Length: 442
Image 1 (tube, rainbow, N blue to C red):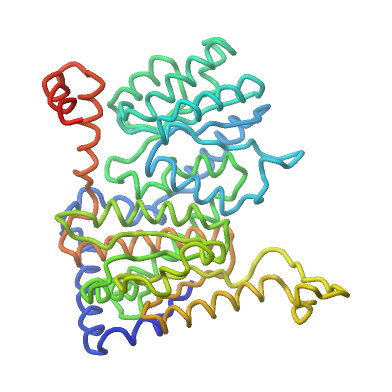
Image 2: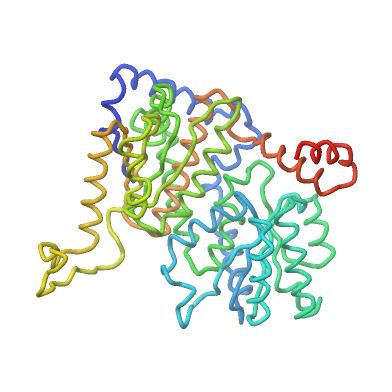
């Protein structure tokens, strides 16, 4: 992975960036020394290098067993319990995976990431016609959205397959010893994997939370972990060249220069959910105490025809981080047309990837000229190894950035506010008075 800051450096003073690099190195030392805020949730820090071959093998065996004779595997989770797996699976899958006539692995779909009645009703409609299994992910087992979805899926499985068969079609990923899902898994005899106590949801993609669904989808989790291990080693170095230090330092410098919005840009639609995962990672980690960069995302060149105008000439309170792919997997050239009515014959014989790259570089230059700093991150290609490295890079830089901001990057107290209001409006026992007050306001 390569990080290039030259299109952001002109927007800050040279000495100012050197100062922010120094602060980033101090934050890295605090992170590695486990002496900062939220240090009880740093299990992700050395997670890649601590994963054993036996643990990888156990996940692979479970994935194989869960896939036998199965057409669809439903992964139930919300936030970090689904976004990491979704990001990796989408990035590595055929763009039209659901339409392929034959697949080597089950189709992985997701539930419990919303409370849409239509979404879950339509999922159950499909499951009536398909052989299915389920991975349910929740540390507590009481998070509303996935708990509702699991009730629906469990009921459907037991009605369709019977209780005895259902227990072989469900794997629970949950707390090691406590919680509603752990209790249910023991009662029903589900196979289980553990969510480590010291790893928060948005940092959990390299635990069974992410690894089991990715393995079920047919991808090489050992290669994913290998990429993460290499990045773990690289970003542990107390050096200014450390890419996580560089990224965190530049983000902080731009933020304190009134750039309050970071837009993650990609030029490959396979990376759309990498952006969604990144948005949760940074938004939930930094958005505290009325501080933090607002994380947004765009898919180019598509969004150049919807958001391009604003990015070029709107409020100058944003910067872009461009996630670039050096080499695409396929080769496709533009054909020549004898009439040339679209006047594109000058492109005939050229690869689409060349056109895409020139769009990327042209946009970067235009946006810089328009007053938008650009950070450029390039991965060699979209494969397990590169994605493992990228995910860990973003995690490490997030920890450094959070400490530089002065917040605890590893909690999320603000997430509870909507839940309390929702429970009150639904007349949950114990919330009656709050519910009455809220309904007056509505």
